[in-house]
Length: 98
Image: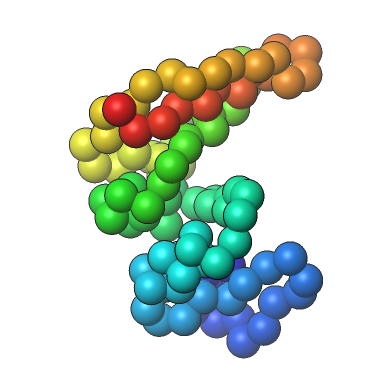
């Protein structure tokens, strides 16, 4: 978890330090499995650093007019790895860096 105000977090979460880039690299080296990232600003920074292995985009049939763009800068080149219908109208699209 990345936060500027929290001092501690519950189980199954790790509070990252000011040097969150080193923390992410350490977590990736120490742990097998998935590390989920939420929030477009953190994801953008990790994208710039080449630290994201897969993007899972959940497609909901809704129209939104505001919010923070997930790919705020130039979108990295991506390749569709897989897709899956999750529930009713929701699709999960999994992309990897091309």
